[in-house]
Image (cartoon, rainbow, N blue to C red; front, side):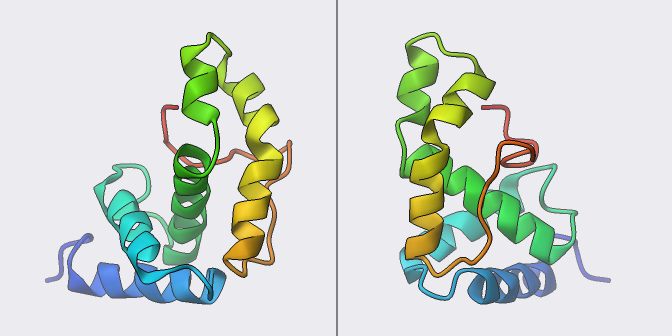
Length: 112
């Protein structure tokens, strides 16, 4: 029996991430994959959904001023609104066709 976060799960999410973001550098793909496998809310989801949500959360925290906005007192929804264009720019740079819109949940169980 395979653990949900074992080698089979890792490979499935990695393959989904490679399809989703074909230009994502390997070191960033590894960081996204680690985030997905460590997240209780993402590690059991469908590989494609988990890869997407992990990628968005990674872009939000690494490629934007999101955390700084939270530190300045902005609530999550406002901070996410202000960084949406930066997230979408990062996604485009990685070859992702899908974009984050204002009507979706942007990052799964990510508490921030």
